[in-house]
Image (tube, rainbow, N blue to C red; front, side, top):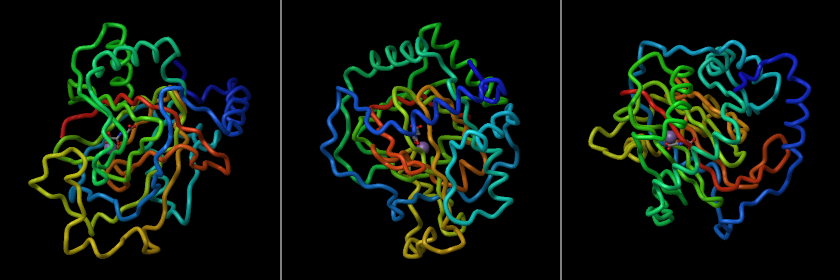
Length: 294
Ligand code: OGA
Ligand code: MN
C-alpha cells in the first residue's frame, strides 16, 4: 500500500499518469455502451442537509494533499474562493494504489459472488444512478475484512457503519449528481474504486437553496431540491458555478468528508468523458464504500 507522496516515486507516478491520460480506449468485454449518456445534468442536483456536523473526522492528510497538487489528479474549473478550495483539499483525499491487484481481485470476486442474482437497473431515469446493481454486505472473507480495517483506520475515528456498500456500475452506467442523505450517512464516505479509471466530479451546491425531505427513505433520491426553491438553479449562478473533476484511478481510495460531502454534489461521469483534454474510457466499475453513522 502506498501513501502516494513518496518523493522517490514521483518520476514513476508522473510517467504512469501521463500514460493513462494518453490512453484513449480501454473497454471491458462484458458490457457494451449502446446508451446515450447524459453528463453533468445541473437540474439533477440533489439537496444537501441543512446542518453540518460540528466535529471533523481525522485522517492522515498532509502527504496526500500535496500529492494531489503535484500529480494533477484534480482539475479545478471556474473561480474557486481560496478558503473553500483550501478546505476542500483537506476534505477530499485520494490515495493511489491503496489496494494491490491481488486485493482488488479478491474484493471483486467476493462482491460478484454476493451479487450474482442481482440485475443491473436501467429503468428509472429519476434515480441518482443508472446502469448499476448494489448491495450492503456485513460478512466478508478474512482477507477482505483486513482491507476494510485499513480503510477504516485511514478514514474514520469512530462510529463506522458495520456494513459495507458495494456498487457495481456497468461500463455504460453513470452516477448522476447527488448528495448522500444525512439520514443514512454521517460526515465521511470512504470509497475504493476498482476495475477501471473514471472521473468523479464534485460541484458546489448552495446549501440555502436545498432542504432535505424528512419523509424520504432512499439514501440518495430523498435529497430533492425543495419545491419552492427548485426553480432557482443555484449551479447556474456565478457564486456557485465551480466544480472539480478528479481522476479516480483504478485501485485508489478516496475519502470524501465534511465540506466535500455536504457542500458539493458528487457524480461519476460517463465513459469517454474528458479529463485534462484526454478521454478517459471508463469500463465496468465496482466501488466498495464505507460510511460512518449519521
Ligand atoms: C453512492 C455513490 C460513489 C462511488 O453510491 O451514493 O455516490 O464511488 N457512490 O461509487
Ligand atoms: Mn453518493
